[in-house]
Length: 395
Image (cartoon, rainbow, N blue to C red; front, side, top):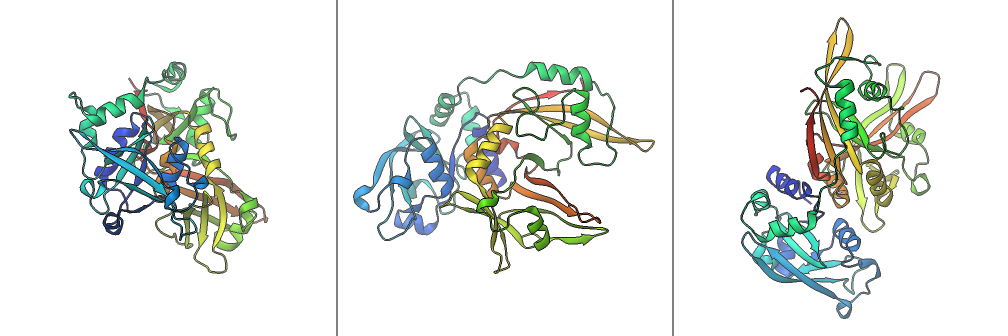
């Protein structure tokens, strides 16, 4: 799938803002001409999760084709369509999908969103349709009605934690850093001030709410969670093996500090890819004798995201240095709720979610690591989470 444009991203955010789940497809010229499209893994997963169709249990051949009602969403009306779902007899897998009248609705390489409502599928063209205006428009329109029906009532806000933050770190206060010149200084400082025990577990920090703090820099990626690979399914069986294969010497340490993404290889020639048949995320080396060497199951990654970020406070701070001492001024909180799980795999494919390795061998031979960190690019939370409210801590 091609990289999303800024306009397309904003239009997707207009839906995630209301907790609308959707799958994304990109029809090619060949697909539109032949009236056939590959059902990609994120789309198959979305259809299965919403009880529309399960390709895994579908038999091959045209006689086993399934059909369901569908609609093409125009600005002023819905065009009745029909979705066809089947597995061709001549292919080992390659599940297929097609929407009637799609060539009239989309051009090659348009980005389309698929939304399920009441066992019907609605197709939205993010490339051609001004989704933001339609959703926010006072005048009734088909897309606005779909969003209104799906979004429902908003959850109650976490007043208790917000008031705690305002009482202990708000109001332009300069909070001394507890760890000078350390990447973890900001969250260690905040959690100590709030009397929250440092949390390396998989559970949220404060009751059901995860607390994330970060330096308010538009270039900083935000950490979603840490997750070790499934070593049983991986070619390499430890972080030490990864370090031995791809590490480099820096000073007295032998280390592997790098970001791995899906669209391009990094300086160690590593990249990510999704195995759509096995539902795994794989890390791959360009060395033919190594190839895929680390595996995460997407089911576990989705579960981690849901467990860690059912509700999250993302606390932004400025860092100030005075008399060789670091201080933090905590400025604002963005409160997100219930990630859009169907977006996770798509955002990996778009390099919006990446993986960081932080592994090193010290001079005494000890291997030290942080678990692989799944991070999201700055200003991209609105693609994964339906934004709730942003609160000021300085007023």
